[in-house]
Image (cartoon, rainbow, N blue to C red; front, side, top):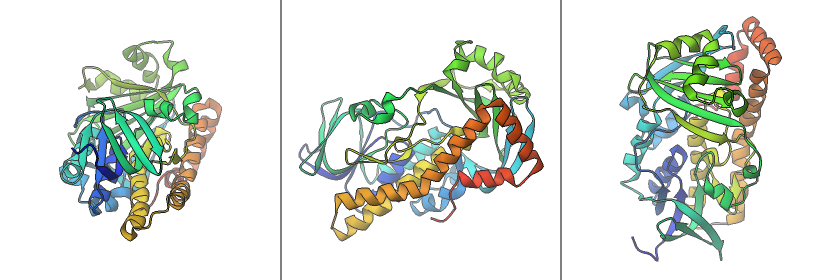
Length: 375
């Protein structure tokens, strides 16, 4: 790679948001450099249910998860900490696919059209209307624009002095795959004291189990297997799952300091997408779709200016902030509200009673945390 090349855009982070942005822009003749620290494919801590709201967009990019076996999901099941269930139809439906397969699927298309560099970004500088990106291996790359797609929490967030990094976060996420008899068409959310666990099938017929809990709840047990046996298993559905499911990972994947604090969609002139711009509570089950949708919003805005050849950075930043907030702010607020309800035993009891008596309530709440299927 030429040291002096200036890219139209550098994307830092190759998760779903970064990969989708890279593919969309490269399809439209932008010179794109995607920097990702890990080789593909790999597993990530993530619920693996995706709303159908993004299917038309993915297909417009030549990506169809259903072609590689993603499970069609149409049902939602939620239980309280005692295992009392509520079921509902998903208004739009969705699909179940592992990040291992989903990222790889998009990467196979991206690598044909964009430059992919496997390295870790350490510094991002901005001077005289141009970015300078320095990697761990001492590569220095230049770009007119930079997109931040580096996930929930990164050393780059500290380097950029982002406000949320100074705020304590008490959340821990745990994920693993299991063999277990579970319906293909259902995504389930089972509550327990101090957190909640999502279950759904993936393209290989295994069940993805991903749960979020507070450190306060976890620290009394100290170990994942002890916590699952002593706390999660107080919910009879989770008790059956962790008693009978056969784990397929040698060790569960974990991520700590998961932050749900507000973030800015643009910082230091970097366009943040996916979890770098904002993280919805996993109980809403739609983080992957939001990542892909944010990629679409940014890419379409960027291409409007790129194809005309008349960039105005300030206007582009302002437009992106507005469109991002219009699309996601209400979802994030709803997610925070739902989490407060479910984490409060008294409020949760009232909420479940209401949902039992008003069947339309759960689908209505789901709609509040999802977009529509228009591309």
